[in-house]
Length: 273
Ligand code: GTP
Ligand code: MG
Image (cartoon, rainbow, N blue to C red; front, side, top):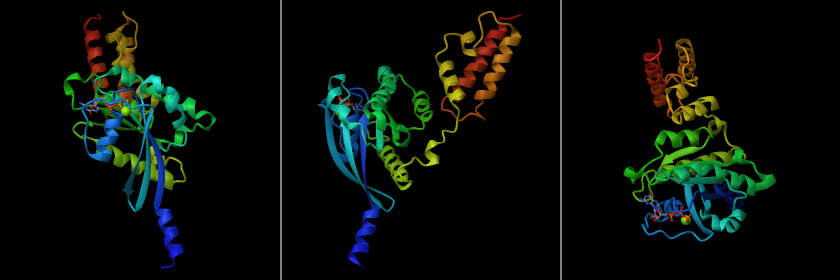
């Protein structure tokens, strides 16, 4: 074969991408990357100083992907170092520790920091995000459950994986899905394909599940005032049942939210004449 033709074909098949890791200090970003690239786990905590850089090659279908990984330091102290590295990323690995609620709550502020640093160039739409609910091996100390994490991720069109850098659970699956989505996006001219964008449930459904989860009592759960009448309770119940019925709603946590609403209605009606 003509060497130029061969070269062109090879060029088409190879791809270069940039990914970054984000999340609070000590959630396991570096360990997740190490588990994937070096197949090992280091129990001792060695804080990333500013940023760590590494390159790995992966195969997605008929393409060889050269991945530049920028592993960010989560400590606020290193903000000045990492802020340079947000730009031109095709993929982001967002990590939290399932045993530390504040690391889950911080995900929004990581997105905010990223948006801010990308400035006018900011187009978060065409970046693949994967959320790692990490340290799932430490089951006893878990405080953020799967449906809560999944809901946060999927309502934003992000992938969600339960991972353990210690045992290796979910790590290869997560990276495979991540690189495959990035490749799909690159082959689609740098735009997220519609299959990535479709969430499958509405923002109203996601917000309602979150609200139910955080409600303080049965009145609050149904969204009625304490002392509401039977009609008011039933009306609120019907509205929520239509929105959250597991046959109609695929949002993570909808089944539990629906059950909680049924129970709340039953207990309220018992005490209303
Ligand atoms: P910074 O670099 O400071 O932002 O932290 P990081 O997010 O890179 O955390 P790192 O990967 O260094 O891990 C922090 C600590 O958590 C280390 O002691 C790891 O051994 C431990 N660790 C990481 N992942 C897991 C996991 O899946 N399970 C358990 N049990 N421990 C983990
Ligand atoms: Mg690190």
